[in-house]
Image (cartoon, rainbow, N blue to C red):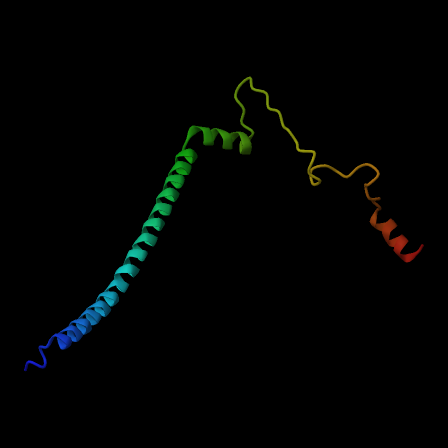
Length: 121
């Protein structure tokens, strides 16, 4: 009986117990760390959702405002206030809004001229 309770065996048993409890503690920490990580992800998603809600609320308020209604009436219905002069500004820098002109303009032919040229007539 003294053999089991000797100092060297006591130290070995205590070491084994420390190792077992360490393994148990490490295994129990893994789900905790995963849950903590998932909580951080959820909080960041919640912050993003709250920002989006704020932006959508601001948009909703703007779409229900008098300024938006007036702007849409001006754009779509050509609305103007009494005594107001409307000026239209066209962008001449885009190629689709202005016809090609000058020395780089292609020569336009009628379809009949084009066919006659293709046939060599």
